Amino acid sequence: MKNENFFPTIQSAIDYDNFINWNKRLEREIPFLLRFLENGTILDIACGSGRHAIVLSEKGFKVVGIDYSENIIKIANDISKNVNNVEFFVVDATSSKLKDFFLSKGNKSFDNTIILGNSIANMGSLEKAKKVIENIYSILKEGGKFITQTINRPIEPYFLPLRKLKRGIMQRIMFPISNFQEEYNVELHFKLIDTYNLSYLETKIDRLYMFSAKEFEKLVESVGFKVIKKFSGFNYEPFSSEETKTVVWIFEKN
Image 1 (cartoon, rainbow, N blue to C red):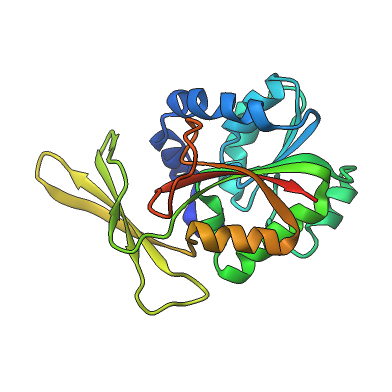
Image 2 (cartoon, helix red, strand yellow; image 1 turned 135 degrees about the vertical axis):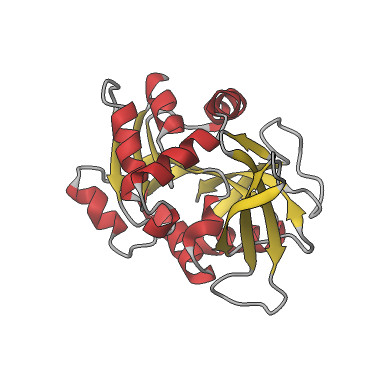
């Protein structure tokens, strides 16, 4: 995640983790990842509570997960305390010293890198998104795989699926920003609805830098990657057009 303010307390990190239906998500995404990952090591960037990293370590990979949020990494470490072959660190993926950090930990390079859940949009700006991709290129082995998921930048308000929480219903809406900025171009509004009184209990706005599929492909290729495959989600449906909401990418380091 791009900053600690996204999870200012351990409770906010726990609330976010509980917000996700992990059983359904892992059932959908893990088989897909196993189909395209190279054998060996995985770096999971913006790993959150480490659910993917833990399952992948149990499948025989050595996995390192990083996230900028100390509170979310606390959850990952707690969940994984009896799991082998997985480590978690609080690290800024946009740092120019990321490669040096891994060298200090004995990781010269990785066979794979994954960034899931549209997390690249949370990096903070166009410049930082590009820096993350450059960092990935620098720490991947030749022929290594970079697997990521993006949501195409909306051109009109985009309503994400509602999520039921203990305190109500969470509504999420992406609003495109008409005056283009390099820091952000979409506002993601979170609104917690009291279903009994039909009122808003709380609201929050997160600012994202999102890409169209063409823009993202051009950016990643400019760093040196080549596209192996792209899909309209994790169900292997081929990418068909810019109208596709979610894109799952398989890149390879040249």
